[in-house]
Image 1 (cartoon, one colour):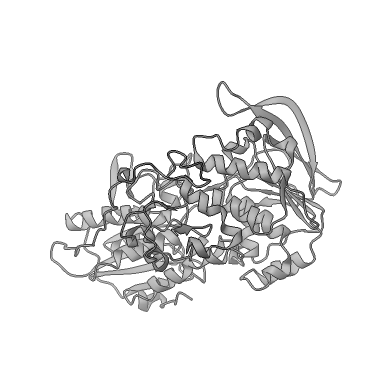
Image 2: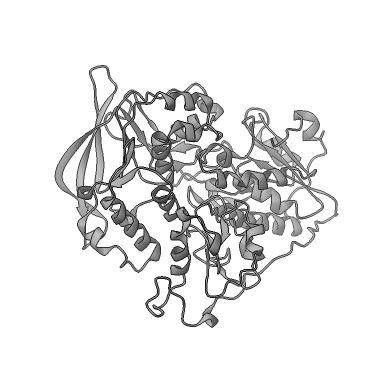
Length: 523
């Protein structure tokens, strides 16, 4: 029985390099790796050796014969990724010719970094989230490299700690991998150390051979509609930070005394928020959820959360694993049939994209599933938010949506000229993240990124010597935790090439950052 990748997949790709028969795709060297929602094991070539199980940092891979009932859907999801034709009308289909496999993903062994004059190499990394940790891991493979990481918060690991939902226990296991990286005695993580406040970027450029900025995308994309400033209107990011105990949101409070909540946007963060709002608080008590948030959820009056998006179901922003987890792990979730275009229901299972097809099949199933007692999550599609209406006291009363329809000629959607208003005592917007400008570096305000060429920061066409970027501030808010692994490897490769070419200045001898700011442990 082949092994199976399940919902917890973080696309780290460690399993790809552990596999002796190249049955896990996409690999980091394949063009769809950065956009793939998860990795997939080919059942036709898997030899059931178990090497991938040991390599996976989040425990996402299990033998097919040991798969839990709530994960059985992944048997077909993995197989469908490789499907060419039906074989004996089996519900699980396999490629006709296993010889059509892509070549084995290359396993690169880092070579020593040799710089003119020799000696140790010192690199500064700004931030300590997944992209920063993967960059440090890549650098520390070279025995003459020392890394100092600057983190403004009191704990490291960024969104891996403060962005992953507390009930996603498997995904949060990736922090154990980061803990292992942090134990390297050539890595200093300096918490409560903010670049621009405690140390200047120019000082880092003077004191280190190179500086990698991995500050992520720190703000939300703003929804610019009337009523956005009303009381009880906030971003989903604020809500996530609140229930995860993020220091920036320690003083935040959310009014959960209302019957209905509207979440605008339907990415993974939106689904996380809806699930937490409707979960049994006692099921969350054993997780890392903030005690303040847990107490508020225990007193919550929320009965319904509507997750609504402008486009149709085929363009839903949430990933297939996130939807499977919601549908098959006990959540009380449904789709109002009138909010799921009939033509999409009819097309479920027929899309050329197996991921979209699987999403539509599950949504069609949910639209027919009877709701259980207790708080419910409802999906809505083809609705554009136009205004947040107010109560007499200035708080949110509801959301007025413009109704859309699919535009078969031009693609996308078009308004039908009608509106509807949905009651909501709390409105959370979840339409994406955006990077913020870094003083002293060029910035692309439209994309919310620092302009770069493969990770090397550029001002126009001119590279800025010794400054690099990785993660969301490099590519924009896309991909998953593991996507940062290949992204950071690309950036480190640029830094290594510049070092070996002698393009980077030798740091000014100064007191060790460890002595100036104090060493911080990862935990």
